[in-house]
Image 1 (cartoon, rainbow, N blue to C red):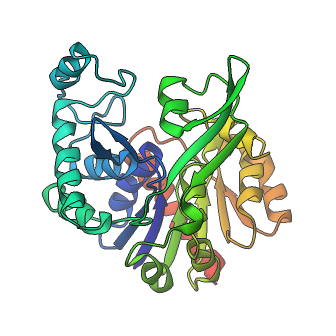
Image 2: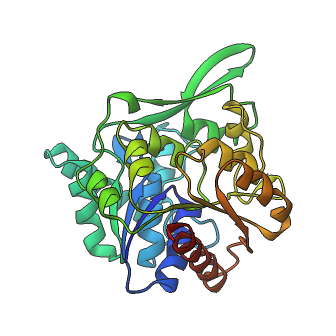
Length: 318
């Protein structure tokens, strides 16, 4: 079975771990969000790609869901002593090594897709990890701070401000001129199943779909497309997705996110059992919907979610 997963960071990575457990023989390709990418300390940082790589490779800090476990921050402290920031973004010493290698390879002329493949040879994540594009795309957020409307990088909005102010608009800068990375469109065309995990529908999966050709490839694929709601009981499972959903005029409900993706993209949608009453609303919008437990409490629970998604894919295929 050839499975393609469009994934952001923590939620996508943890779902992928369950998917590997549920379908260990499957050929899994992950199209990773690079809209969160940022240049810091002269280095190219790819948070979502690295979170997938570290999680599946066994190097993630399980408690926080990002960065390396057993991490230290001596380099960051030394940079701060020189007055070099930003102090709000935490890169650990082990993590710095990844970004140094990536930046050196990019500087030598290798595209991000080739660099990502090279980094994965160390971690052996058990999936093929592709960036959505080799081109530079950065998600920016329009906000009002101290009475002044500004546009800031998503990382500043999410990490420094912790989404404490309303997002007025979300813009994937550069996406309209980007091209899908090598292998992305082919993977979608050859997939048996396409999954949208419980990643942020605006700044993770939404940014991937903003790259010209990717949404069209997903919508026209022969494979069934099944998504899992990142909203349970009217609130994000993790993070502050409600803030960016509001910026694009979408309510923080499982049914509203399904309608946001649309029947032209989705064939099936899983909601949590607490949102079972919304299944009829989703089906009225033309998407097959089932209610199953969607809390990723451990790998076994996440594997059950993945099996439910694959079963729903078989159902809509029939």
